[in-house]
Length: 597
Picture (tube, rainbow, N blue to C red):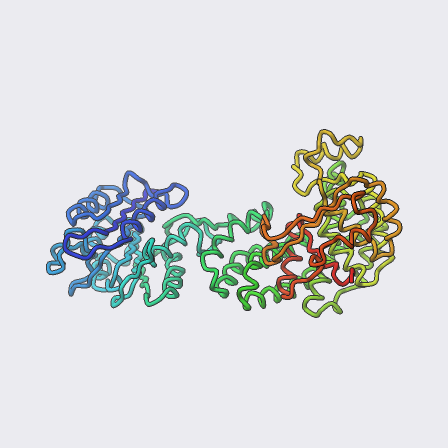
């Protein structure tokens, strides 16, 4: 595809008041769109003109538009003074005189005449100038019977950043309209995520909405002879396909991509919600169709925690989060039903692939994850007053099946099990399933003691998992020290859970086998930040067994009491629980609150 860009910005005028940001706007737009991965406009056919004379503009436009090249996409951008004359809209150049505007300014009709002659497949015209919406008279150049309605007639999309009777406002660092345009081009503002490239018509919808919110300025959009999708620029937020995105699903990378979009308008709660629903909606629909019964829950949870940082700022977002918790509870309940059915139909339903060493590592984590998500549904229901609806009997059946068929896989393998088991064990205790809870916790703790707490770090490199499992088998960890969780939070979960199942005395006796092992509890100060990759507001609380800590009672005495305090906003508490499920390197210690008390 052959693509050309002309960007003009005029700050300096010989006979008109100077402007401050027009050259900057033209430069930034040009530099972005010329990038191969953004606009892919070809430098050989493109021009950046800063405070040019009328003659320089006419020469550049003629060279590009009438230079004998048939363009697939031609984009013209202007930032500067604009004016309405009886015969149309004019753009003021450096040597323009207001008393001779029709002779010394560049006419939009003149540009349109050359476009009509050259007939590029698609032309985009963007005017960030005062009164630029007054271009009706100029459009007649493109709407004549001899230039309209035929195959190959020039398609033109025009975005004027102000109405016919309005000025175009500026920020210190750029025009209001151009700033909104750049947000769309760079992905700071969501346009759509289902197509690989964006039309100017797509972008204009978002620009109009954002500029209108900024004050007394109303952009105008026009489109003529449009008969196919064009490619103004590439879409930075495009998901190649829902199925592909699900196969490559990585929550942290997705949230990192979404965060700049949300951060671009943090004070607009309804827009924040709309952005998240648009970004995640199609993926959630596809996830619900997948064979992984918990995939839909994971997608919904990730969508919810995308807005967790805004929950304490906007009541609308807090209410939306609560509605998401309610929806998630239903999804997890259905997933529990399917999991039990699968377990009953196939004895080894939890095994994946050909088995072998992979299942030795992954199966214990997978079991913890199923228990954790199910336990989370109980805690979420408690937060919104629906705990009585939790399917206790179905959960009990799941626990019985796991103990019956996977007892040897109830093993402590990774610190990533910590949040899942914290949620599961506290839910089991609250549901008065103490016998089942003891049957789950005992083999897990025994495994922890047997390996002397040398469990894998949450961040273990996949290529080192085999070496770690070999170290477990040979009791030789020298080669994998960097892959072991030191300290770990899984041990803290076990010791806090022991009193819930009357296992305190048993665990106290076993703690002598863990002498010098350091366990930890990271306690966040602000749970609205619980989904961030790095949580700065909080503190680590390490406890070394054999150093002030000999018994579980010693741990409880030294444990920070505020760690057990649940956030007062249930949407924040629920969001923190979801964050621990999606990113299992953090534990919401407040789920132990009622149990410990």
